[in-house]
Image 1 (cartoon, rainbow, N blue to C red):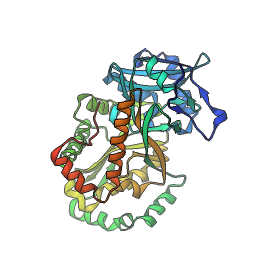
Image 2 (cartoon, one colour):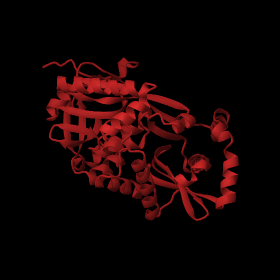
Image 3 (cartoon, rainbow, N blue to C red):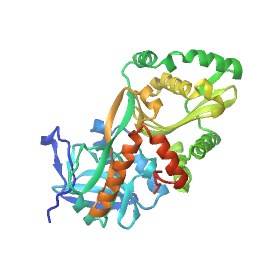
Image 4 (cartoon, rainbow, N blue to C red):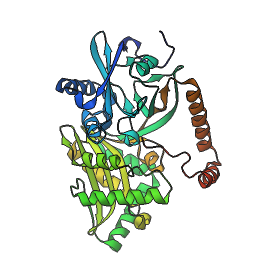
Length: 376
């Protein structure tokens, strides 16, 4: 039966569309070597898929820590044309690979893929498929989905000195940062960056500092579920061709004062979990860490740092480019779809309001978990 549901298409390139006519969900650990090789080839051929989240290694790691990991194979005229990894958190409910730890979702394909989402859900026993940062293909939303656009950001450069010059010209914080750096060294000892720290105890320090901040600010603790911590540790240990975890730490003397844990895939570093010791806040040690990472990036062949979705002040200060991504869900239940769409729209309006902080404090005092992302 025909369905007037979401089609995922690149409206700027209608001649390049592929129409998926069959959907096959299988366990990630059942994919053959040929499938993984094909996945690599599709990703390499598509400049939209540079993020480490689209690399096969991320899905393989997630599958080791979450056995309910599956991959949707999209077929057209008898051939597999794309892959879409996910977790089946209930019999009829899907969430992105890596859950809320994932900053980008989309179909791994060489060209934009058009498909009937209602049929995709029904054929695989699903009623709902959530996404919170759908990047590619560019979506045209119709009746079977609710979604709203949000912003992702990145810093990209061809000549590193040009990017650093731009930062100094556009940000007074960075322009005056040298004064804070000299004061920090006078008061706490020489600074040293360990770009690729391999000591697991330092990763434990970073997670502990991040969790302390989550507790202080009443934010969702992304490290609370055991599988999240295990996924981070697996990425930390990963050393695959074109994919690896990277822990960078700034030391003052022998003490770690700021750190970042992320992923590198080819020329892209995904800026994932930055932290700093709050007792060093007045020295802007997070800025110092970032600048030193950027200065060392060329030796690793890194030409792009991806900050993911969100509009935190530090991202706005450091970015060179932005993209539109989408948050929402494929959902075959009309009432549930309308409820979530209305709630999501209301939340977005409140966040843009001048009264957002007042409303947030009132709501959080009455409902502590209201508005927090749910980790599934």
